[in-house]
Length: 86
Image 1 (cartoon, rainbow, N blue to C red):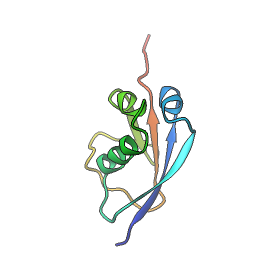
Image 2: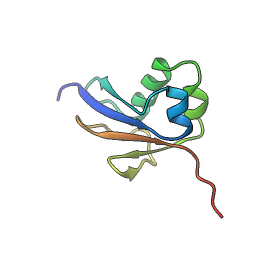
Image 3: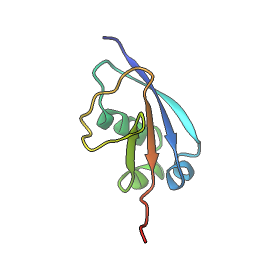
Image 4: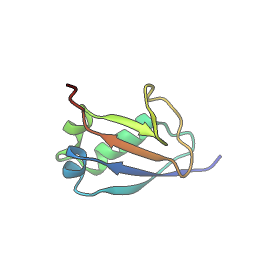
């Protein structure tokens, strides 16, 4: 099992904080969602960490409930803002 490359897609406030719509992230083999989020915090230390504290994630279209979930090469991680109900 080798390194993985994922595509991170940012929406709403996360997009504004990151300053881009999407980016590729290269991670070591065995990386998890938590590892990806740590890398995003490292890449965008100014505004994104605050936003990441309030967002939710979809991994390949499925809600992430466990940040220790493993990533696979080519996965898409969506960073979604909190949604208001009503």
